[in-house]
Length: 569
Image (cartoon, rainbow, N blue to C red; front, side, top):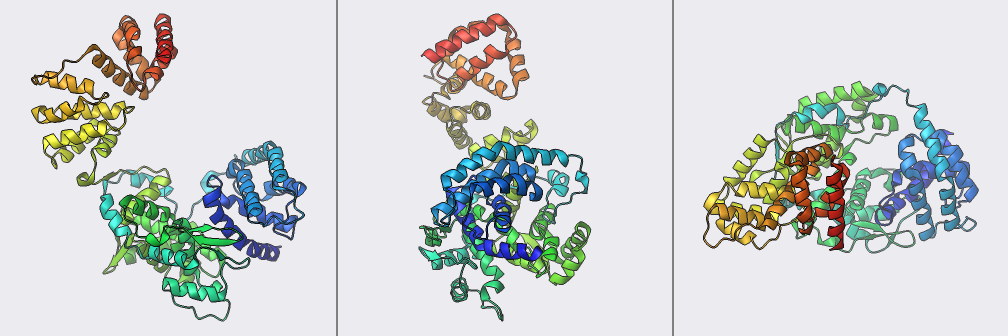
């Protein structure tokens, strides 16, 4: 059976690789990884022809076969049917749904018919495994979870300005190679069913990206893993996309890399960030390869925890011990690989994330940015902030809203030291005017600018023209006794109240109810008589909330009346 599985998997691989490319552009919400097991067991149990699909076979595959072989019932319950739907659509649109198959519409109807039963089966599998000991499960070398506490305790990490990171990303050799490969692929290169490229094409591709031709007696395509890693990177970067009739094509703007705009450069670099996994060693034995899975990520997280650099010898020893502890084959795999860190460091260096100097491995600023994103993707907390000198006013306000008061004050103080008070006031109020619905940013900005005294007068005067900031500007100009400044109106006061209610509501129901109780039902009633007229972004939302949560029925009733009036305007 093992031989049959290997043969079937080999037959499927080129088709699935092309499907993954197709899915990025045509079914981004699907998970192509979930298609592999379904397509493999369809080939093994129901049809020798990869393109022949019948409704009855599809039903049996999903309801009989998949419950016996699925590895992650939770993921399958959520995503397998959409993934299979995308795969069948791919077969149909690319002419691979063989004659004699049921129509795509019929197959999709079958997916709809079996959905509830399939999900029930997956939930039963989940119930059956609830008693399993989760403590026995171990991740690979790239699992960040064991380091969560240490990551949370790290001192604040300052990330470099986007302009600096973009300049570094423009110099990344692997992206240039991926661009060159995609440009060589051209506007419509047909890919093969057994291997993506013929041996002759592989030699041309190697020349295009500057890789040497391997010395091998077998097919060249099977001896160039680095080329295929670059191919996959080109797909990740969206330099390559599926074409019609089993072809792959270069994206229109690929040849323009490195792009002119810093934002476009960093967006592209981030698309390829998960290519770090391509740095893991690949051995002839699959079990040994799996024993070293995650080595590249494991290298990155250890560098981050050490402040960005490690002695290479000590790091190598630590990772070797970790591999032996995690997997019974870890020590054998480490020995078989010879120098397991070599491919990891080569890939990370090529992606601009690390550098080696006199036996010390260091994260580059681009590498620090990347590993912070990977940690964040793993839902692990780490205190990373933009460099003070590169932080915009809006970034400062958004960050400070999430910090304890003393830390926020320190951030503001450091940021202010780099600017003249008048300029700081202008930047903060401009940031506060960007989104009229963001009351918290607005209140924070007004509070800080309010400490700058007369230096902020020109910025306050300019803010009078912004409806969301006028109430704050009029109030502060009046307090500063600026000649000719308008007096705050009753509408200005009501706007300020609505801003404070918005912030209070964002803290939770109990906090909001408490703030209403503090001013008493009589005052709330008086406000409800007039506050519905204010063109505030959250007035209807707040009135609706008061009608639901206020403990005084009369106040709740008055809020409903005010909401009706607001909606009628």
